[in-house]
Length: 600
Image (cartoon, rainbow, N blue to C red; front, side):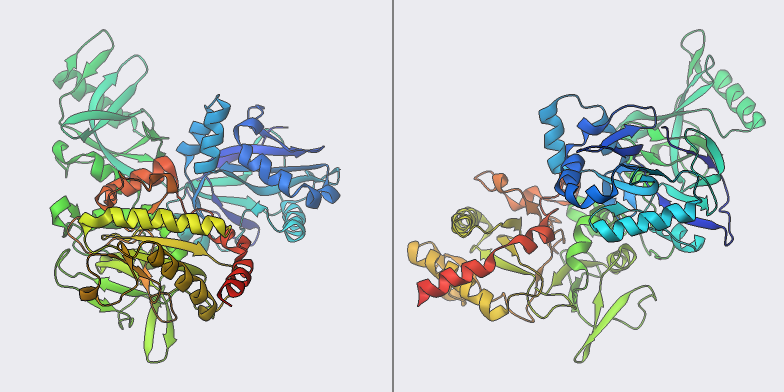
């Protein structure tokens, strides 16, 4: 059984007979589940199951829930989600090329993939392929209601809504499916249409291959031109003749069929993404005579690949924000775009206290809690007493705040929907950056205590001179008074053990160059810098989540400037990826019982 194939379209069909979905960029495959374990089969008939052990394990964990519905066959996409509407194809692609089991396991842990179902072809052994799509969707929805934990694609009846989601989140595009369509194995059909969300990247023409008709395009990386694409589609016959004639007249013939061209002509290429080496699905879009070849560089290519949503108006993109490290406003907005999937979960439904730096960092700054009158309609606010707080729940809101040069994002320990804290946070505050090793020592000693209590903990840099330790909690379960029993016990215990190094003294002048263990800050109405928030210091240092093995003598806060943090996420994954799920598993009630017995 091979997947039913989509037909490309330039226009979105509209009407009551169509359903719409976001198009995810991954591996299309069929899930076949006849016996104990499911099998994932690619569109070319290859078994992909062994390449995605995290997905196999996920289904093994819920096997008993699936038993009443087997045998079962589904159609879907293997993806690595960077947000709810976008998959990073390069990560899925690299997994598909792996052969070493240990390497696969490591990537499955740090960069987990998942399977999104969008069609149900067989359930309880009954063939559904001749049923209309609307009926198959109904059966898939019932399966989701029964199982609860599987990922099923969202379906929309309004084309504008789903296209806006694709644009805002830089998805591959959208799919339009006729409600009455059957499912036909291996055939391309106009009952399912794909509409691409093209990105437009400027390149410098560098080569032409007459034998196959391909043109080569490059961008400057540092001082060298690096090839980013080869293309031949998209040109009209006249454009092709003109371009070939120019290259053969002005270029250098290096072999029978090859010409090289010095940097002189720039063109815009339509593509769907960049796989780390080349633009994906490239095609000529237009000549670009408004830009000089020297301006065509890696930095600008990254921004073109990740355009700002049309709903967010950007002003002064070239404004220096961290001039000491050459970070301009559009660089900062690019950071927010890329980090949003990891940043937004901590901002979601939290009353935001932002610190804005209107002239860049460091410099004049002010706190902003009250939402200004000019915020756009898409932003969420929450009134609490006499303050109308901004609640940053989506990418558009985050980018709007970034355009306002909100550089620090401070959040409370509870959401707008909870009365009690959703996590415990310890603030380890050394007297100076030169004493950062004190924070490392305190963090490792505290982790040993947390391990004794069987509590799962996380750690991040503060973005300044200290560290923050996080213990996620079950939602809305423990009061601030209950968490204070624990935080005060741990801090006092550590100070009793090493009074010459650690203190709980709040007045700086009385700390005598000791590390301050702050448990008082963990209270209702207090805030702390959010994970992945920048700080308003000159170096553009990020409050960066760490893996515990990184907490050693080599650790320094200055390692985590904006470019380095983006590289970490890309190459190592997110240390906080299971934060909320782990919180629901914490046995903090048992800890409180132990402490109350101990303190009594």
